[in-house]
Length: 231
Image (cartoon, rainbow, N blue to C red; front, side):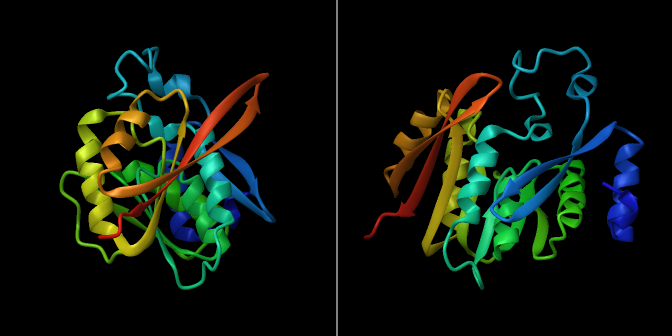
């Protein structure tokens, strides 16, 4: 991609990031839209020889475009009647689902917990030609006041069990009464059934499986849709 085509603000952000990391753009075709993602070219350089799974609490999961995020991006792109509806993406990372939702016509808020992550998201949104996205810090333990959303979405956000209860509180705080939550995770995540067992007290949950092939192997992605139980 020709960086000179970026708006001035996002071009400045790109140059600031480039001073720290080697960068590249990935493309993801979603329907008739092409999304562009700014990402770190060499994850090994970022890890500096560390085992990423020795301590998952320290692994920067946002640097990878996860298969679950790609599947959720396709799901978001096919949701009906996006005009006038709002989407909150939690733990957005590189932001595939949020960008896909914005490209489909939703008004999107992408959230994460570090400035550097949202800098990547801002450049990606500009590179994808999307203007209907806002960006916000969202601490699940101390969530800010935001207007409720029609849809809350998240891919690969269930790595740590101590955040299950705060995440459920986030759902209750930010989801409109008639809204939907869409989650996507690799089927191998041991935390997923534990979380869903906890969530089913307050939400009706449906499940769909998507199998994708990558580098000669099959990866099963679980997509869950949650809706508040009717009182």
